[in-house]
Every structure is written in structure tokens, then in C-alpha cells.
Length: 124
Image (cartoon, rainbow, N blue to C red; front, side):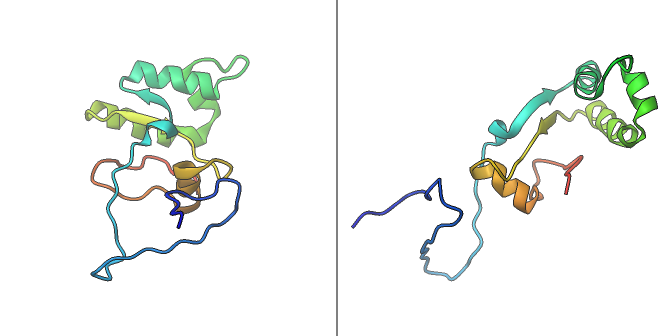
């Protein structure tokens, strides 16, 4: 009998059977989220560079001009600045339903609450 350790990658769903002795359906997993991160930011200078590269256009080419032009970014940017000032490292990432594995899971289910990460923004 062949036992598959993963799911079929070109299928929209897969069947599975799990067994345990306790009936407890909760599991704890350690997951490396590195593949989901596009940018890691540790300083305000790096934050400014990321915002300019992702949100700048034409003459809107400085962090000041971006924040003046795009009101929706002001609160997010200030939260990021506060996190950096309090010793946090920011991880900018993206999840998609078109991807496999963790990316699709986070896209469909959101980012779980953990003791390790605080969610600054989670587009729903």
C-alpha cells in the first residue's frame, strides 16, 4: 500500500485520514515563513526606501510626498515606525490563493495569532 505524505498539487482538493489516541484535533506546528516575506525592514531608513519603491510614482518620490498624497498609508506607516522604535523587525510579505502551501493557507485563513508575531496589516 502506498502512503502519500503530501497532497496532489494539481488538484483543488485532496482526501486524507488522520489518527490519534486522544481525540484532540489541535496541533502545534513550527513553520518557517521566510518564503512568504518579500522584504525585511529593521530601520526607519529601510522603511522609507520600501515605501518609496512600492508606493512612489512620478514626482511622488519621497516618503513625505507619498504620505501627503496617500492618506490611507499614514496610519500604517506610523505603526511601522513605532514598531521599529520599539525594537521590532518588520517582515513585508504577500499571500495568494494562486500559490501552493502556506501562501494559499494564509490567503484563505488569515494570519494566525502567535506569541512571536504581531500583525501590523492583514488585508482581508
